[in-house]
Image 1: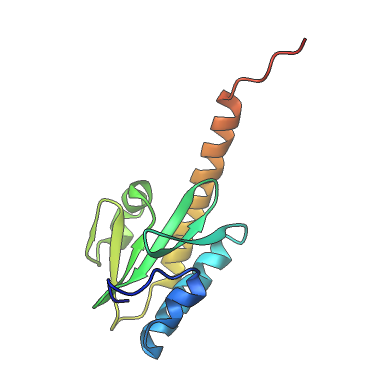
Image 2: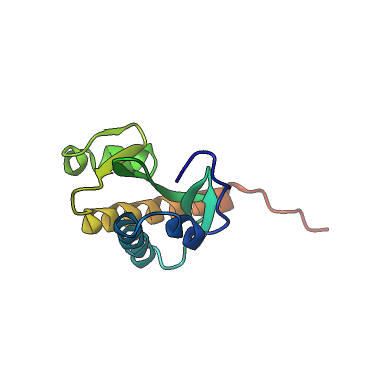
Length: 134
């Protein structure tokens, strides 16, 4: 997607902006995320497709030569060995466009993030003070 293109309003609109080959990869990644997190919402945040569950769950985006996957630093650390075949950073990994997407790995990472987000929400509910009764 060109940087000067208008911001997409949905993941469908985002995916539709790419050529067929890239579109197929994005659809495959989206489906893997949906299957791993069936209760997650969909949004566009930071101009990227985003899945939400008690906050941001994961983001993904098509770039010139790769699909960027952004599952949070905790997930990158947890799956460090499995992700070592790909270029990445603290909270991201790059899957080249000319290689098959590691959909099973993406699914495992998303399931890990779902557990993290649900646990975070549980902790926040527990820590939230209840209103006093009169």
